[in-house]
Length: 308
Image (cartoon, rainbow, N blue to C red; front, side, top):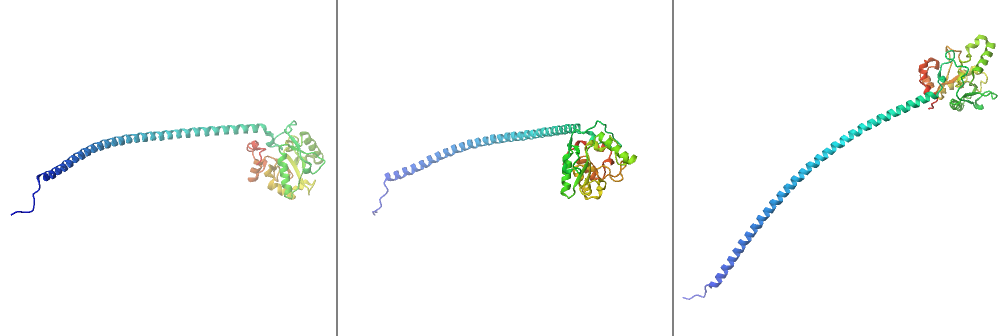
């Protein structure tokens, strides 16, 4: 019995098989190429990894070196700062020494230029020679003088303090007038002789002998008020005296012979310039000039003409 199916021809089968073989061969070749490329890639990756690791090691070594250098730099900076601090301390010390020396020199120059007689205790204690005259004397302006016919002088460097005080008193309705200022050795001699003629030895209670008067220094004044006029012995009854007690120290003036002093009778009209610093000290502790030891007083000579 015959069928319609025809068997495949041999050439077709061979063609199919050949194609399959080629595909298999191609796949195998591709696999081999891929495996080789993979091997090469692995090798390159290994090399790259090794290089990276080496670079990391180098970088780590560099980092450690940089850290070491930075640490050394910080240590050097700290040492430099310490050295700088030491040098600054030295400079500060030398500056203090220079300032101290400068101040000492200035102090010595001020002491040398300031008449040491100006703070001595006179009035039966310390003697001024007949040749002593203040270094500089100035005429007190007439507006402050009670008797306009008189010419009254005072130490030139004391005059500004006196004027400021009198202006301040006037502003407070305390019109103060000057009745006496500088008196020479000869003037004091004449004055004392006249007092002796009038009061005998009783004159010693209120008038100093020549050479023992504070007036010879040129730093002392006798005062009154416009209201009292020549009745200056009653100065403590006037409001101007109360003003002086409260304010005179601000301008360097103190009362020389208060009540119960052991030198002369109470003289509320007699005021002496001793410098603002000493006058302020005396006011603050409620003491008088002649209460202090001379060595205490001498400490204020360097600031005698200092203004606050």
